Structures are given as C-alpha cells and as structure tokens.
Amino acid sequence: MFKVPVPPWGLAVTAILSVQLGSALSVDLISIVGPAGTAWLRLTMGAIILLIFVRPPLRSIRRRDVPALLGLGVTTGLITVGFLAAIEHIPLGTAVAIEFLGPLTVAALRSHSRQMLVWPAVALVGVVLLTQPWQGTVNLTGILFAALSGTGWAFYILLTQRVGDRFSGIGSLSLTIPIAAVTAGIIGVPQAVGHLDLGILAAAAGLAVLLPVLPFALEMLALRRMTPTAFGTLMALEPAVGVLLGLLILHQQPSAIQVAGILLVVLAGAAAQRGGQRRRPTPQVPASPEDLKLIS
Image (cartoon, rainbow, N blue to C red; front, side):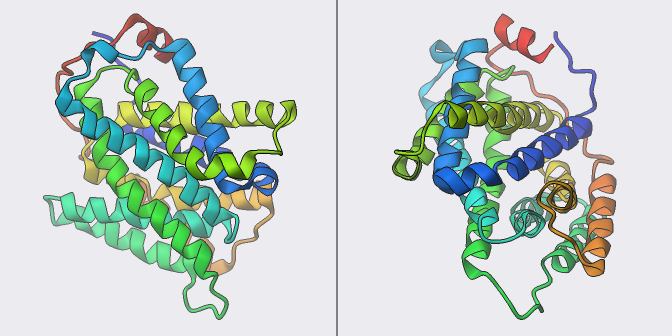
C-alpha cells in the first residue's frame, strides 16, 4: 500500500502555508473581479487541474456517499467566498484569526482528554490578542464574513474526514471541487463577467495550485491519520502565518500585542500535534494509479 512519508502534522502545516500564500496573493485579483469572482475562478481552475490528473471515482459512489460529497463541495465553496470577502475588508491575519474559531470549536468539542483542552484555551487567548476587539474601529462586514468562513471550516474538517475515510487517494477532490466551483459561481459569475481576459485566467490558474489543489489534497491526506481535535488545534498556526504573510506581502504591520498573540497560537499549534495520530481506516475505494502519480 502506498504510504506518504511525511508525518500528518507536516502535511497540515504545508497546507496552511499554501492557503495563506494563496490568500495573500489573491488580494489584487479580488480588486478586479471581486471576492466571489476570485473564488469562482480559483475553484474552477482547480477543478480543471484535478480533472486533468485525477480520474473521478464516479462508479464507486454509493447513494449514502452523496450527502457528504455534496456537503463538502458546498461547504468548500462557501468557505472560499466568505474568506476572500473577509480579507477585502479586514487584514489577512485578523480574518484568519476569526476563521480559526471554527476549527477551535471542533477541537474543544471533540476532545476526549482534559489535557488537550489546554491548547484550544491557549490558542483562544492568542486569537483574542490578534483580533484586538477592544479597538474602537470594528469592520462588522469583514468580521461577519470571516465568521461565516470559520463556521464552514468546522463542518469542512468533519466532512473531509468522512469523505477521506470513504475514498482513498485524492479522487474525491475531483468530485467536490467542481461542486465548490458551482457554489461559488452563483455569486462569482456575475461579479467576474466583463473583467475576464487571458491575464486574469492565468493568474487564477496559478492561484488555484496554491488554493485549492495543493492544500486540500494535503488536508485530505492529513485528516486520514489525525483526530479532528489534533487537526483543528493545529490550525492555530493559521493566524500566525496569516499575520506574517500579511506583513511580508500586503505590508500589514502587526502590533506588539499581535506578536504576543502569534507566539501563543504557535505554541498551541506545535503542542497539539502530540498524541494526535489517528489509526488509519481502510478506505472502501482504493487509490487509483492517477492518484498515486499525482501524490508522488
């Protein structure tokens, strides 16, 4: 059986870096085609890339698989639209910090160890320091969009694990990403129409590799070998990476208090991977040769 030599927490961290880099680089595209238009273009390009390299396991789909596949696809589309809409209004690090509350809730509710509850609590303190709710100016629109994305992310973790346990390899992504693209397209197509050219399409294709293709594939693999608690708490690294890339790429300067928040969430994320190994279930649909070539 094909095995990924990278530890599951390493896959998750790499996915985080790819997600945040793709988000930071999407800001310019958002200003042209809008957040929903950017989400639709990225997901559509991602779906095309996946369909080129991965054969969708259509014959293996059973009736009981449909709700999870549809749910994951729709959730992925809503997460993408909501988050891109959030970073249109608030800094990248702040949006990521709010979004993280979704995985944090999963980590707290699904934990079966009192010791594990320490790390979500530490991460929560870091999130508060990053968002600085005591500041006078609050962009409610950006906060609401980030909260929508965070809510979707909580469901995304659980649905990804369920779909990943059912299908081996990353063939399921070739089923769910097109659904996500259609979901985003409901709002995204009207936003993007009239602004499309070869440059925009090329930029969207490049961003699609960073998000959704690479990170979603890595997350699917990671969640097969991790508990939702470990994975959800490890996402505490997201605000730290978001703030860092916001500084380097978008020139969004964090305050000293936000730096303290970064240190807390990094501590929580690094500690959460301990004891998070999950016994890998035997998938009911084996990995296809295309899956193995793409992963290797």
